[in-house]
Length: 375
Image (cartoon, rainbow, N blue to C red; front, side, top):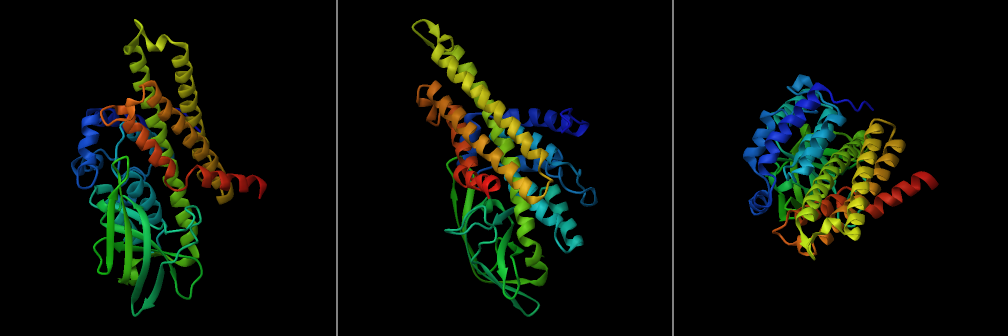
């Protein structure tokens, strides 16, 4: 990897510093958590104006054709500011699926809408009782009917679905091997959703598909390629989320560093106490290890599936453990009351907890990494 920042990366970080620093405080996060979608649609439009939504989109669709490294750098900045916009679902995951779609003209149209900020997309794949890392397991079915398909089944924890206009739905097509990926309007007849807030203020939905009728063009990717594309897209989403976790950890350490210099006991700043210094040292090391493993996952993002999955799961283990260390120690440094809504560290704690559970948790990634070593 080349660690020197390119012109586009320097531009991204400069624009992120200017925009995100304006709204990176407890009052803003509280306001967004109580809003209808959990994020500010006006700021999403600003993301589009700054070119952030166009970052991985091909130039043919009006995008910047950026790399996964570009995406990771921007998501570190998003993580520092605890941005709750559905960037990963739409710009990272859906972008990759659309790029692999059979209908190239339709794909470019959809990618252009993402770049312009007019389309938000969520993945509806996870099902009750299914392993999050086994994309082949799905009870949702699609039956060819006339010049289209009929879908039925149920999905859970469709991240960012409440604010999405379209859903990417995985389903097994009758008479075919593997799974297909369908683009389903969020307001399609026969589709119902129960939406809810997660503890970090982001949103998700449980979705029921009751004989949803779709045109043939709704099939983005057929069953012979659907599983592989979905695995690639989820892995890219995981890398972006790890980048957000790294940013959140580094911001949490900065908050704790300022606090231990200001907070006094027995006439001295608590940062002068050896026990606190040990905690801060542990946090510093954990955050740097997390960033190193993020780089490891990035370096293997375009390798074959076995190598990519092993590197990703290894990184998810380190980043997940580091997130727990940094956020829990941050609460302890604040004397426990940091968990309350009035303190920024509590918001970072909740965000890091949610990131660790998305697209496979520590246990599940530990199992996958172990299998990659011991078979």
